[in-house]
Length: 308
Image 1 (cartoon, one colour):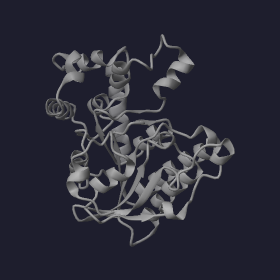
Image 2 (cartoon, rainbow, N blue to C red):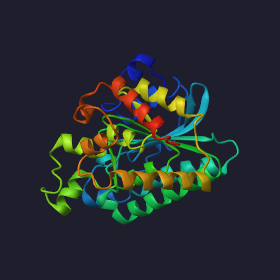
Image 3 (cartoon, rainbow, N blue to C red):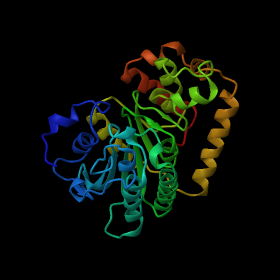
Image 4 (cartoon, rainbow, N blue to C red):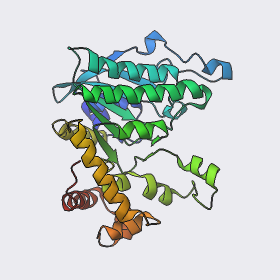
């Protein structure tokens, strides 16, 4: 994958395809793909529903370098069935994570470019099993000292099992356009009613699940602008800031979440949370330029002594 730097790194992460993100994130020409489209490892289930297949089943996996450092990488293609997890899709990602843990010659960093609506409904049981296997593989890899970094900013967001997978990673990079949640807006509306959550209310969706919210609450570790170069820089900056995966780390995280629940548990909407944080003009958070927002996020992290 040899492409001019300017063609991809200056482009929008949100608008890019999975392959364009890979090309811009990694050092030029360094990517070697595993089980590429030429292998035609397609879903065994979609044809039964008369649905189109993709020769890579909506996920690109392989290895390359980022600023000269070797990494393994998986990039979901949100434009193919919403980046959803099916049998082959999940097996490719699980295999990559197991390779990172189990082989001495494997890079000790895995980057997950997550862009997913969750489990593929046409492969529900296989997709649910795939998510469980991926979570187990991430935790096993982290125990073995492998860093797993999630990057979230695509069209499909990071919902369902993808939201849980992101939460299991060592670090998370997110943009304003990124969204992370276990239940997607349409799922909440379907089950609870539009009065509870209007999935067409874009400001509501973004202030509930969006990147600014996740960053301020400590659910993401770095904030990127919506371009591939910014995601690359944020990922590079996190490479040497990976926490140990041990009991102390888990205890600190549990304590952080308990404090967050105690402080914000009665808030009805995110502007109330920002006000409780002491942020001036909390209603303006959504409209702040990226640079101004990032300063507020850093200040909040320092004020709360956030270990993440």
